Image (cartoon, rainbow, N blue to C red; front, side, top):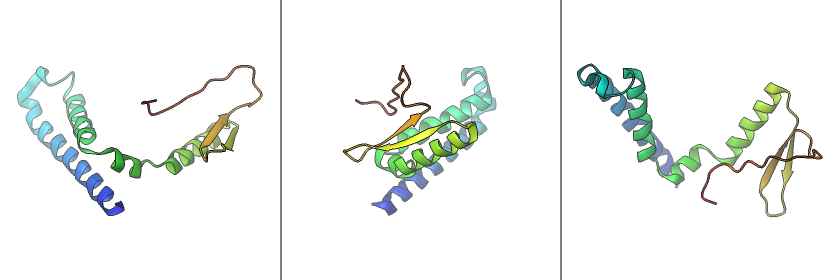
Length: 114
């Protein structure tokens, strides 16, 4: 499955780059109908093509929970924010930013589909 995920990601990236190149070639002929600027139009086409092509499994492979944890820990170090990693009974990892005994709590659930 890992090889298929990598191949699929490479295909999605290649397809997005080809679409961006084609949009860049067409941009002078489209004029203001394409978007606010040619750059915005080209980027929007590439991003839309990438996300239409990539599957959930491929995206999960590229952006694993370990990647999220590493990015959050690096951000906390850069901003001098207190970060506490908590392992929940079901094996899920949760992160506290700041004081866990604070009076108010903000719960952030990224991803959707709850």
